[in-house]
Image (cartoon, rainbow, N blue to C red; front, side):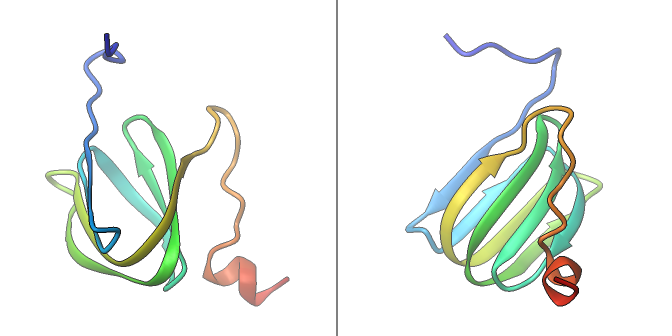
Length: 93
C-alpha cells in the first residue's frame, strides 16, 4: 500500500529514458545538460543524464518535462543540503 504524505503528491513518468514528466515541482534549483536539481513536494530530486534540457516548465501547476538521456533519479535525504554540483559547483571546483 502506498502511503500519502499529508496530501503531498508527485508523479514521475519516464518514457524510453528520453522524456521525463514530473508533477509536484516547487522550484528548479539548478540545471545543466548533465544534472537537474528540483525542489519537489516530497523533497529535493536530482536527475542525472546526458543532453538534458527543459521541454516544458509550468511552476504554477508544478509541472516539468525534461528531454535527453536519463541515467538516474534520486531523492536527497530530508534535512540534507543540495550538493552544489550543478553548473556553478562544477565551474568552481
